[in-house]
Length: 120
Image (tube, rainbow, N blue to C red; front, side):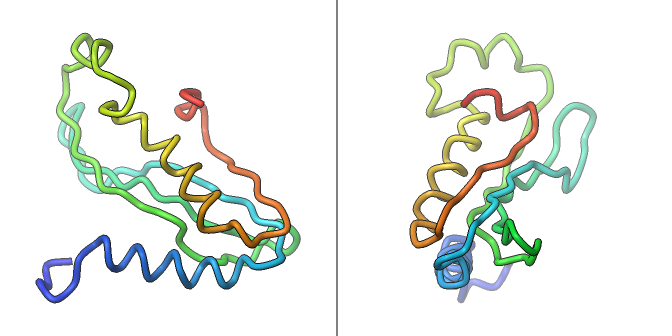
């Protein structure tokens, strides 16, 4: 990740392209969730990933999307006045949009997420 010859965007694009090929004609589950990379008392670093799985046999088809987040604690009141596109929770909508784009050649797609995705 620190190699200047590559960028996260390039790696995500390459992974999504390869995933798209493996999704062709399959029934796909696009599963998204956020995981803690480094916790700092209410804040820290997180990764939000969207993975493609074959709905029939559970095979992992690849990475659809991913984004790194940095959270600071104690911002709850300020978050309510921010437009949706600037909210951290907007990642759930972006993940679903990216799943629709990457898996466009799939026979079907279902997006699966936890209760934090209620922004849908």
